[in-house]
Length: 440
Ligand SMILES: *Cc1c(COP(=O)(O)O)cnc(C)c1O
Image (tube, rainbow, N blue to C red; front, side, top):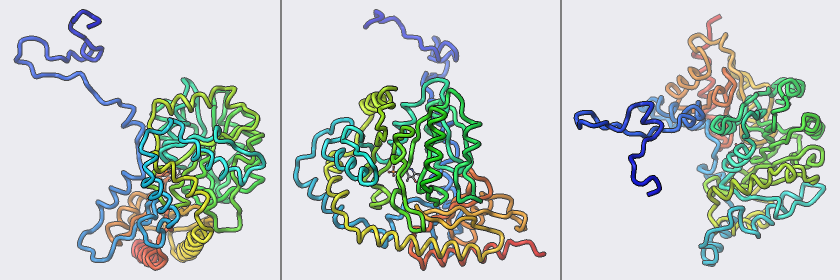
């Protein structure tokens, strides 16, 4: 032993007098204690909130529970994974060639396939070296936030947003500054606010496009403005494109990487949403930076370093990626998009028939819509959590309170569900609102 076997005394023991002392009468005290950053980082989570709502249901209600709070439609038969993707996995598994560990950045053919897939929409080509494979987009977020979290730094996050960014930033002690997405202008970014929020310690701005939770799709002009603002501020853009190409409105999806020569972009994505296989846990980070600024700043080195001390997606899943990306039929995507388009329309139309709640913007992409509650018109409902808890209890419908994505007195509704069930849920919501409306 290095210290010659002397009794080890930890700092915690000194402070708290743990370790049990002599005598043997005292109760044994242990030196371990959980890292407090974990509970403070978690805060309100989507999963925790949905579990609370499920617990609020009236179990004597014989009607089925209709879940409109989730972000995973794979459980519904109409959102089944494609046969091509399933076959690719079977083939990769059966080949017995992918039972080994993978390199920490991912296997070459899969990195190359993702690079080619993303390059289809760019004016320059990504190479396999620009792509890092992750355990879903969630791990991409973990890697990127961890690499950027140097002491004193801050990051700009959208409000409403996707709470994993807040949790990860908090856990890494990266200061958060929120900018607003504006409902009255189609959930566009408040660019003037960004200029006020940013300072010399701001490292990045996060964009989610197509949007979760707003269902918006950004226009070319607006994205260009964001890129130019980022350049002016000297910050990079983290573009969450996990819903890339899941658009059904007038606006076409444009990847932020298109503006990579204006300001460097780290694109995060995965096969979870577009291929409807979130449980397969395969995502990526793509470095869209033709000028090489991220390499110069050792951000790329940081990503590689972080991935060296982290885990990798299963090798046989990685090996299936080239076939999944190249061979999935257009038919499969068209089917998903047409279901989402129909559901989005039903959702928007029906919600605006309901008094007390209001939808300012019809979704153009992703699978969510934000709906505002007018609590002044409701008799006995104080806020969004109260609304959702009573809705679960009285109508067996689960909807996410806006506070879980940063906007109090709003709701986030998922419309990725079969339309008959969506219509049933909306009828129940209407009955609920009518019942709780103030009698004027
Ligand atoms: C679902 C989702 C993710 C996580 O994707 P996974 O690939 O399942 O880890 C990341 N960002 C947003 C905005 C999402 O909605």
